[in-house]
Length: 348
Image: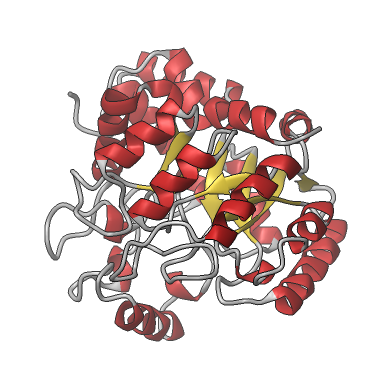
């Protein structure tokens, strides 16, 4: 394997051509929703992203306020964004050289214990919902809980209703048993939109081989995560893009290239990537989730080197070329695999 990023001129030209041709879909971003950020994503060749539109702790009322703000933002940035509610909208975003915005939630807290709210959120444009965040909710256990109790009876109804409506089920922050039971119950493919492999980084936020194989058998996929706490290999050293690519290699070997995508989990332009207040915010988050973030991991180590910005997404393509993937395989990992899932799950 060649060390990143030493490519020949021919390899560089090939990587550039693949990136321009491919559908590039980020399975999860929490980046600043700003005109500047939209421009960076367009420059980095990102055609669409699952954007977390509300904080994980927000309830229904707060979520509606967040959606209202997003509608206003999209209207004022129509030259740079496309509101995505169907897979066709992503094709249109690429054609018009815009970034497609997919409304997503990292916690189903806004629905509380009222199943009918799912239909309201779907009508408002929500197309991806993560069942739990790190904590337990009415649906099941999160990855940060000591227990691993699986889906509740209400959670089973939520899975069935999301299938009926055509909302993609995301299990990235869910506990292992909750994940397995949701995968088995769902009639549609489900995803880990942003996750790593526990074999390479033993974090509760990562997924074991059983979960990874199960999601592939259901026809779903895993978006490889670039967040430092789930890909680091060497203590007190910033992870590199090679650490990120190692997770992709492992996933491809274990579950097949058709079930692998990217879910970078970048918080570009937000407090956690800024100095001063961002460092304080990072320390608060570390204190809240000590089982997930090692105490020595600083805010500077939050993301893999060479992959801290959407401007650097072409480095993924370069890395995959360097590691010997075919053009078709690279296009699949960059976004075609996610696009296939959207076409299958979202009702037109």
